[in-house]
Image (tube, rainbow, N blue to C red; front, side, top):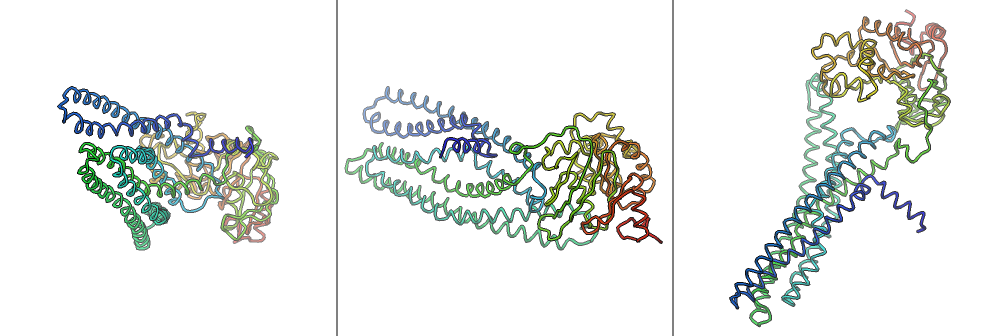
Length: 585
C-alpha cells in the first residue's frame, strides 16, 4: 500500500462514525488495559500467599513472616481495589464520551438522510437506532475486562505448571474444549441475532403504527387486525429470543461444568502428586485457586459471545444506515448561496419515487421569477405536491434540473436552500413542546416581535387569545388536541416567522373554515408582496394570491400562464384539474 493510500485509510478510520469515537479516547482505553493487566497480576498474590503460609509459615511457626506477608497482602489488596475503581471510572468516562459522540453522529446522519434513499418503516428505523444500546452495552467494563483477561489464561496455566508441574494439563485441556463449544454454537447465535433484530423491528413497526392510528382504530370499532399483527410479532420475537438463549445457555453451562471438572481433576491429580511428595498441600491449594481464576474468563466469554452477536447485528444495521447516501457537504464541492433572490426554474424535470413504477413528474418545465406568485392545480395524484417537494430540495430529479437563481439545486448547500425557503407541507406535523417552540423551532434569530407578527398573519392569534397560557401552552405529540385548521395556522406562522424570500404552501387552508380562510388570504396578500410564492391548492379563493397558474395531469404540464387566462381556458374545457368552484355548472 502506497503512503497516500495509507493516509487515506487512516483518515477513513478517524472519520468513521463508530471507530473514530474510540480512537478519540485511545489514551483512556490504554489506561484501562494497563489497569486490567496489573489487576490480573495482583490476582496471583492471594494464591501465592496461601501456598507460602501452608508450606513455610505454619511448619516453622514463623509469626513474624506471617505478619509481613499479611501486610504485603493488605497493600496488594488496597492497590487492587484502587485499580478496579479507576478501571471502572475510566471505562464509564470513555463509554460516556463514545456514547455522546456516536449518538450525535447518528442524529446528524438521520437529519441528513436523503428521503429518496430512506427505506423501511418509521418503527423499523427507530428499532435500528435503539439497537445502538446493544453495542453500547457490549462495550462495558465486563467486556473489556474479559477481553484483557483471556490472554492471561496462558499465564495462569504457566504458573500452575511452575507450582504443580503436570497438574497444569487439566486446565490446559479444559480451555480448548470450552472454546470449541463456543465456536460451534457461534453460527446459530449469529443467525438468531439477525432474526431477532428483524422480528424486533417488525414488532416496533406494528406498535408505532398502532399508536399513531389509535383514534382511527377506535372509530372503526375494531382492533382485530392489529391485535393479530401484534400477537404474531410478539410471538415471533419471543420464539427467536428463546432459541438464542437456549444456545447461549449451552456455552455458559459448558464453561461452568468445565470449571467444576477442572477443580475436581486438579484435586484428584494433586492428591496423587502430594502422596508422591511431588507437590505440597499449599501448592495444591494454590493450583486450585489459580485454576478457578484461569477459567473464570471462559464463563464470561460464553455470555460475551451472545452479546457480541447482538452487537454485531446491530452494528451492521447501523453501519448500513450511516453509509447511506446523504446530504453531507464535507466530501462534495457545493456552492454557497446565502442570499437567494427567489427565482425557481424546472428544466425538463423527470422524477419517480423509490420503488414506484410510474413517473410522478414527466418532462416538467416552468419558470417562477423573483416576486412572482404561482398556483399549481391538478387532480389527486397528478404530481402537484411533488413539484413543491423538488423545489424545496427534499428530493432530486432523476432527469433534468431544478434551478434556484440559475444554479442547480443539487450544487447548493442544502442548509442554504432551506434557510431561504419557508415551506408548509400538506401533512402538518407539530412537535411536543410549547406553541412558541413550534413556531421558532429553536431558531435564535426569530424575535418575539416576529412570532407575534407571524401569529397575526396566520390566524394563530385569533384562537390563542382564548387559550390559558398563550404561547407557553404545551402541545402533545403531533399537536394532538388542536383542530386541523389550528394546526395549519401554526404551520403557516412557522413559515412566516422565517422571513424567507421564497414561500411554498401545499393545501394550507384545506382544514380552515371560510371566514378564517378569507382573513388568511387578506393578510397573506400584504405579507407575500415582495416574495416568490408557490401554492398547491384546490380552493378557488386561494388563487387570489397568485398571478400565474400551472396545471398538472399525470405528471405532465397541460397548461400554464397568467391566472385569468388559464382559468378561462380550463373553465371552457370543464377540466377536472381545476377547483370545483370554477367548473361550469
